[in-house]
Structure formats: structure tokens, C-alpha cells
Image 1: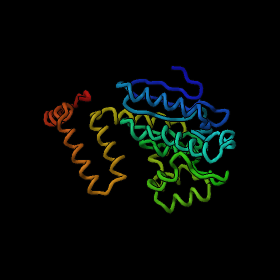
Image 2 (image 1 turned 120 degrees about the horizontal axis):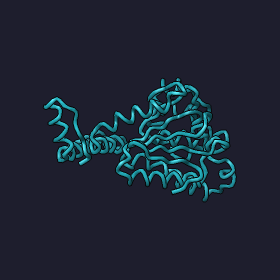
Image 3 (image 1 turned 30 degrees about the horizontal axis):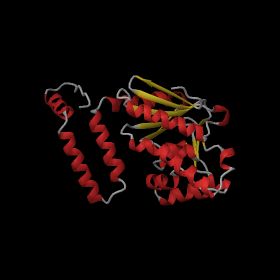
Image 4 (image 1 turned 30 degrees about the vertical axis):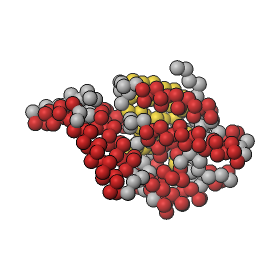
Length: 260
């Protein structure tokens, strides 16, 4: 499938998604979100793709927000539709059953920050700047930022970031738990690939069920989350990979997982 606003390349078990609008700092417009949806569906349905790495073209921006020219034309009805559409596309990162790593190589603002928040983990270049500046435009986060940011860093810090609209540095994002790691710019993708390869060495179904327990359990009372964990643990016990993993451990050899 041809794309105009993104690049998608599955290679060696990793699906690379690159937002490719560097002249507008990779801003998200409706067409870009539609292409992202298509790429995510392709990755979801491709058994060879185990992990996604998401980044932006150029060295200035991951995604520097939504396309302001589109936002300026919104009315109450189209505004809600725009928000729901973006939320639906980005939600795929949490429900597709495959981990995703946001490689934040520059500005991750507004919708770009919200997209990164939906990924399983975030790695930032030292040059990255992250924020939710929507209030400066007379709007608020619309692609999930008001919900995911508070769950990730707490209500106080989420209030500060969203209500002031100020950007934070990569180092500050690491301090508050918004990103997992900070790297030199030239090491960003290789660091993400190293994490991806560690994940790819694990049992695919165990990875998928672990993600489901984390994603769904985070929204449940602890007792319900524990029951979900036990149910998914039981499913793992029915897999060939569990038998292979335990046998390999006892035989002191590397496991050969097949995702079955």
C-alpha cells in the first residue's frame, strides 16, 4: 500500500512507522491519521511483525501536534468528530496486541504527545521537547491526553503540563516517568531496536497476554485486575510456548518460541 504522509516498513520482525511531513514538523492531519490506521492494521495482521517503532522524519519533530489549518475550521459537531476519530486511531496502539515504542526525536506536542502516550513505552532523544500546548490555542487535548497523561505521571503534573501548555525537556520527562529512557540523538533508533529485540526473544503469546493484563487491568479495581491476570496466566499455561519455555529452562538452553 502506498502512503503519502507516513512511511511504513516491516523489517526483521519490527514494523517501522515514520511520520513523513517534515515541512510541517510532521503535524497530524486527517489524512495522516487515516494512513496511520491503515499501517496499524497491516502490522496487526502481519504475524512476522512483533514490535512497532514509531518516529518522525527529520531531526526536528516526532509529531509537533495537529494540523492547525484543519482545527481552525472546526465547529462543535466537527470538533467532537475530530476528537473521536483521532482517539479511535491512537487507541489501536493499546489494543492491537503488539508492543509499540515511540522514538521521540524532537518536538512531541499536542497530538504528538498524545500518540506517544498511547505507545507501550517511550524513548526520547536528548533534543526532544514534550508538551500539551492546546490551551494556548483555546482548545484542550482531544486525542486522549487528558486521560493518559494523568494516569502516567499523576494528576498534579498532568494539570501543570496541560493547564500551562509549557513544554518539558527529555530529562524532565524521564524524571517524572513520562519516558522510559533518554538517549543521544544518534542512538535513539538503535536503542529502540535493542529493546524491540529483547521483546522479540520472548514468547509472543506471553507478551500479548501481559500487555492485555496491563492495559485492561489499569482501568479495573485491583481485585478484578488480579482475576484477569489469573485468567490470562491460565491461558499461558495452555500454550506450547509455556511447555517449551519451562523445558528449555530445566534443560539449560535457549527457548525456541513459536507463538503457539
